[in-house]
Length: 328
Image 1 (cartoon, rainbow, N blue to C red):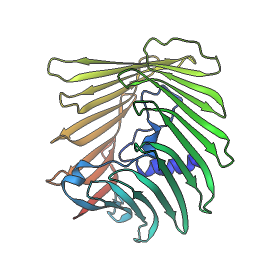
Image 2 (image 1 turned 120 degrees about the horizontal axis):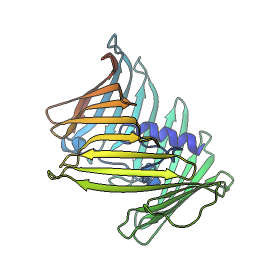
Image 3 (image 1 turned 180 degrees about the vertical axis):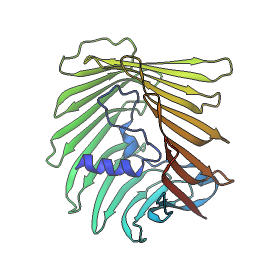
């Protein structure tokens, strides 16, 4: 049940963390903080700047422009989305998600409603505002799983343990950090057994059991004369998998390209970004060097997204979304 509810939360947050994946089987170049899914919500600067209180997103049929379904987001004064309402093509409410905020960003309760069923999430914090425990309840209001968190003296998460409804440990993550606060190592356990180790030291030390997957990941950054820069991630594991990621940024730290390579150093996928007034204008996705799709974003004069369109490699419209806003 924990996995199912987590996937529901991820689906809701897909627009802001579209690339998030939990401990993928391939080389994982991302240093996740798993409290991000159950600790706090995030402000959207353009919402706060424009005093947006509601966003209505309609998904249109690419051929007929008829509304297929829609989502309404409620926004607080801090630009935080605290409620999601989902409607079918007839405008009937089908599901919703509501966060009960206890300050500007943190929430102690979250309610997920589907038809007549309600699922509950409860968060507990310490006096410093750090998340200590998250509990999930099913539609019968029965506890299904509990996540417990502990931190080091700098407030960085060092342990995240998940227990089932019987109190038995099912999953555990352990984290170590460098002095500068960046991730040094992550360990993933399932049912009490170490399964994966993610090492970010570039030159790992120590011995890990053969049955355990160990990924060694090295990150390097180089700057160009115009202050633009490139980040290179190289990784391999003890199972024979290897890959490389190259991310290119402008001098304003806007990501221009994100390229992934396999163990034979052949390009597997690439994302190319263009911008207008520092807002993403287009995103082109390539697979093995071939264009797969292109997403175009449209904006209001004040910088709010008003249109999202995805075209396939032949230029055919596949997805069409439009946005409307209400203000405080």
